[in-house]
Image (cartoon, rainbow, N blue to C red; front, side):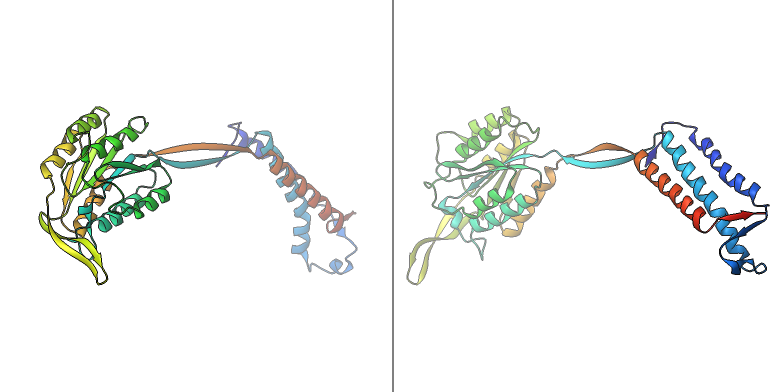
Length: 330
């Protein structure tokens, strides 16, 4: 888009008619072009002669038009629209206790299915700050928080049951995750906590951690994984493979639901891999990030280009006049 400093500038373009009028006044004279003697024979080539007569005037008019346009300070305006997405600060808390080896999510165990879905969730959160806490009988920050999601995905892939003292410290895990979010600027700060059991370890109760998260304005989404009852869990490895034992497992739905409700989040229960996929997709939909459009304008003057073009037209006019349009007046 172009803008001009003088609103009535188009009227100045009437001046470009002067060279054309001058050419029209001179067109009635008798003129004999030379040195092309063949053009003296009859009216052959009359249309061509007329073209070469009017060409210098047309070039002069175009050059004058460009000069007039430069006088009104033409500016080319470039408008650029950029989208800015305000990210969400997310801490992922993943249970890696030994019960997560239960194979009621066959063909994989619980922890492998959880890792796959967590990575898929991270991949869908383009502009978000994400950190990772792993917990069992204690909690450990694996990623303090970053916009580099490849770092988070790599840390999730390395999670294994047995990396931490066994147990299920849900309260400590939530407190650790919330502490990483407390000083961050984004208005939307959430914890997504995944576990397959009940709190049985740690010096901070789930109730205390939930109250602290709520006071900081942090929403907590809790996910319980696994089927209640008994599930096959590998207990030993022999030369012939793993030995399994059916171990009774229990997810404390009431506790996890209460933790989510008190912080403005939601509790979900996954009893199969497909259910866990839907849960993370649902959280992804709930925690949308607002998009803000930023419009910027860049103004570039056009005087230089127009003057160069006008000069080129004048030089072309002189060249045409000196070669093809020379006249002998009689």
